[in-house]
Image (tube, rainbow, N blue to C red; front, side, top):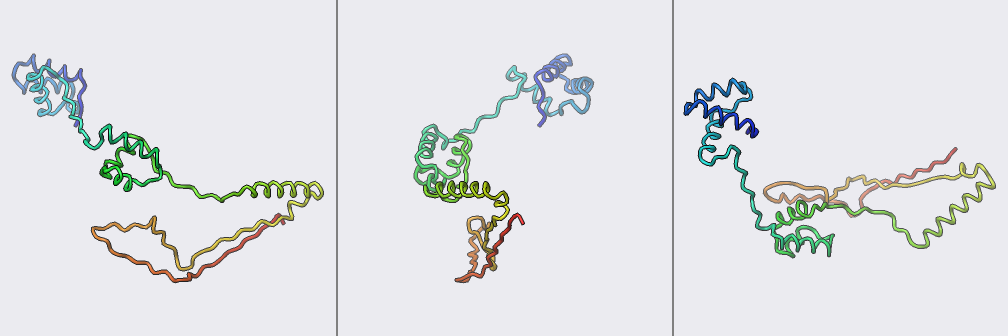
Length: 204
């Protein structure tokens, strides 16, 4: 629906007042002022005049705000406190603990508390001794470079990777939508075949 400005509504009401009670004459006058593209529909124009005659206002009434009963200040405070105590709890478990519908929990967490779900990043675990070993290795390389300028070109870098030959199903990312559970089963051998690829390279 096209919204008309306050100034446009004033022009329409004034035009109707000057033309008396004749809607046809008012419509012709409005078409001359606004043009056919910008002029309001006759039904819209009549609603404006009727509203002005009943309420004395030319502006549209604001739509009523939908009150969410589950989004009470008490529930929002409880959810905020629960997240602060255990940020890793899922929305399903949190809604069960606080006896709050999951849809309401989702809305409070995202729209009221402005929180986002983040995944855990996996990195290699480093023990206290690893830092010492790495520093010793770096010092060893620097000492040998001082003795032999081509020492770095003699270092071989290598790595390996394992590839599943029978395919791999990640149940966390695989979802099947339907009205009923299709009970899809993916059989995997006890000892799946895989290939290990090793690669090494050096400056030469």
